[in-house]
Each structure stands twice: as structure tokens, then as C-alpha cells.
Length: 465
Image 1 (tube, rainbow, N blue to C red):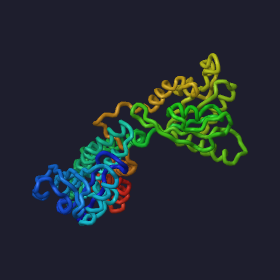
Image 2 (image 1 turned 120 degrees about the horizontal axis):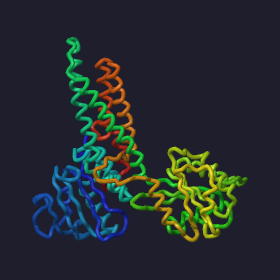
Image 3 (image 1 turned 180 degrees about the vertical axis):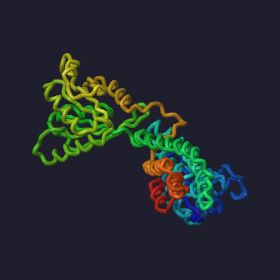
Image 4 (image 1 turned 180 degrees about the horizontal axis):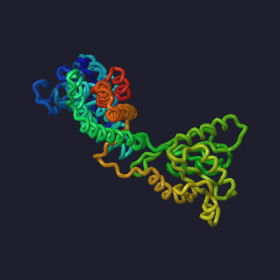
């Protein structure tokens, strides 16, 4: 059931600004605003045309709160599908809250987090995956994240899922018809056509599942663990990459005792750098806890940046490489070896020739974190390591863990359908597997949903959206 009450909220971010927006949505949005809005012209708001803007004042009784612009949107042609009002006022927090208070006093109630978008979904203005893309668009911190969220909000992903469901629904209807005429042993669904369709759908779902690895990088950033022995310059490198003094730098070994994280946008991609405690044997309990976290972060990182000291013995450098090799998954994680402090020696390239335990694809970089030497080359190598390729507006990329889980379940169901056709299992079992696939695809777009799922999704929205 859709809540019929009229909701209001401040939609702009907290703080001072030139302009702020206060929104109303619901059957009585226009009439409530009319009680407090005094237009420059005498014509009432409910007599005005939709999609028009009007100048006047918001009053609390005889007191003028602010001069405003009021925009009118009438159902069903609004974001929520309901009568909606947007009040553009001056951006002082005091003014915003006074306008909100006078609207509440005249019959509106405060909107819950994400309630505007939830009403848009419930009123059929968008499906659930598009609604979730709205939150991703607001939270996007890179060009790639913005592009993917915008494409999904405009229905690219939804259209792909809807197409899959429509084609499956056509065949399930024929199979259901066969079950109705089971005693007559008739076959309405051509099994060869069904096989071709199932193989095609299986390939499409697999492609979407595989895209999640890239989608997760786009949405959450690339985790890069900076690891190495104590005093090799990890914190100095973090500061150089971020171009700010984020981590404490000292000649004293063991300065960093906990992980320090920060993000930076490089080439439209967000990288999440993790400065870790230096790896060494220590009796210090606190430092030991930090070293344990170092190993944990190494396992979680997509890129492990091993920093080694150029003026150390080659055996020590190879011991560091061996320690990292034992910790990380060399098949799924990228290792980037950085030979630091090259300003202290004459021929750092000779060091690389004697390093062991590296794979052919591992890259060795020569830098001076303190002098910021070759930092640009290092950032370029980080971008190559991600190997994202070009993300264009037509790409359908899964970025949402809920969608990923539903697609994995749908893939398992369609694989059972494929196996069932080969094994010639009874039609009713085949139909059950197709229904399951349809169910999981429907969970993505909200064709099949529960109050618990909806509540969990929209509670993470900001208020006013």
C-alpha cells in the first residue's frame, strides 16, 4: 500500500548556500503549499498550469519567511508520480528549517530516507534497479561511476533484464500449456528452439555476472595495499600519491602501527590506497596487531604495491617478495614492485636483474617517494594494472551486490534448465527451473519484492531524495 500522506523535506545538502530546495509530494502538496505561499500575482497555485514556476513569499501567518520560487508538478507527470512542489529559497539553514516547520504545521509530514524515490518506484515511474541507480548516481565519485549509474538510471540494465524475462515468459507459457494437456502427450514448446534460447540467455546472464568485478571497481574503487618492511618509505609514498601529508613520516622504525586509508581519483578511476604497518618481527603488542592487519589488507587488495629499499642487500629484497608471494593470490591479485630511494644509488636498474620470485607480468618501478621522482609513471602503471578498458554509455555493467547475487541464482537455475533439456527430464521439473530463473530476474527490477527488501534499499538513501 502506498502511503497517501503528503511528505516534505529539504533536498539540498546541509549548510549555507545561495539557494536551497524544499520538496513536497502527495495528493495535498499543492493545497498545503497554497496555505503558506503568497504569490506576486493573485492567481491561486491550484489554478496554475503544471510545470510552471511562480514568484512570491512563504509566510507564517503575517510573518514573511522568505522570497521564493515555487515549481508545480502535477500527477502523474512528476518524479514521484504524485502532485509535487519544489520551493527554491535562499540557502541559509535557518530559512530552510523555518519553511519546513510551516509546511509541517499545515499538514505535511517529514519524509523518510529515500521516500521520494520509493514512491516513484511504487507509482511505476521507475523499477527497483533504476531506483538503486539514483543512490549510486548521488554517491558517484568518479567519471566511470557517474557514467555507469546514469546508464542504469536511464533503464539500460532494466531493459536487458526485461528482455530476458519476456523471452523466458513466452516459453514458460507454452510449457505450462503442455502441462494442461499432459494426458494427450502434446508438445507446444519446440525443444530445439528452447535449447537455443536457454544457451543464449545463459551466455547473457554469465556476461552480466562477469561484469560485476569491473562494476565493483567502478563503484567502490580499486584497493591498493602499500606493503613492505619498516622504514622503506610507505607513508612517504602515500603522501606523495595523495599530494598531502596524510601519514606520519619518521626515521623511527614502526611508526605506522595501524592501517591508514585514503582515496584519490586517477584517470576517472577511484583508487583506495592503504598504508600498512611495516612487516618485521617485533615484541611490541600494538605493532604486532598492526602487522596482522597488514597481512589481512594484503589479501583484500586488488593491487599489492610492494615497496623495497634500493640501498638494502638483495637477499633482503628477495625475502620481502617471498613473504608477499606466500600471502597473496598470484592468480587474481596484481603485484607491483616499487624500488624506492633510487636517489641514493647510482644504478638502480641493476637491482631488478637480481630479483627472484616475480612473474613475467609483474612490473618493477623505480621511484623516490621523498623526492617525488617517477610518481607520475607509477600512477600510469596503476591505471594499466586495472585494465578497465573504455566504459561507454551502452555498456551494461553490474555494480550492485544485490543484483549480482540474484544473477548468480538465475544463472544456476538456467543451467539446470539446460541440463534438464539434455537429460529429457519431465516437463514439470523443467517448468519449475524456468520459474526460478524468472523469479530471480524479477527480484532485480522489483517485479518480485518484499517490504523487507524495499526497506533495506531505501533506508540507505539521503532524506529528500
